[in-house]
Image 1 (tube, helix red, strand yellow):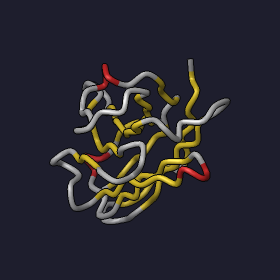
Image 2 (image 1 turned 135 degrees about the horizontal axis):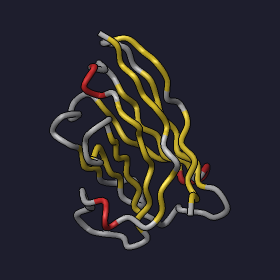
Image 3 (image 1 turned 90 degrees about the horizontal axis):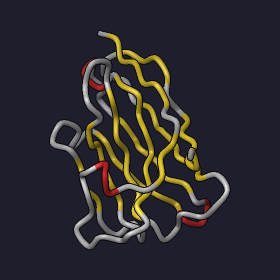
Image 4 (image 1 turned 30 degrees about the vertical axis):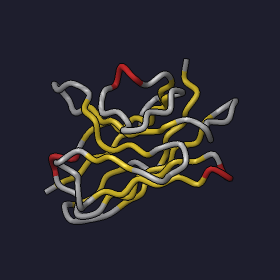
Length: 126
């Protein structure tokens, strides 16, 4: 079921920045809405950010707004998550997701996404 591959996770210190990448495997997702979710130990998976298929609109969780930026380069079939001013609370496994239904207002709900990556670990130390 894994058709998206995330990369870029790692161990960083609070205040650092890093960029996650999501590269679909086996097919193109250029016409799909894309999103990032994350799941910390003992917590449910939560929405982080989403971007429309065209890249013209984005959504962000309040907890990451003004710190994270989602973007995509359709020519490369790749989605990115630029994370700045990282906090220990950002520690989680980050998942890339794709929604084949292009929603005019996007979606913050995991049930709306049809394809998922295996996740990449992001650990932020104090």
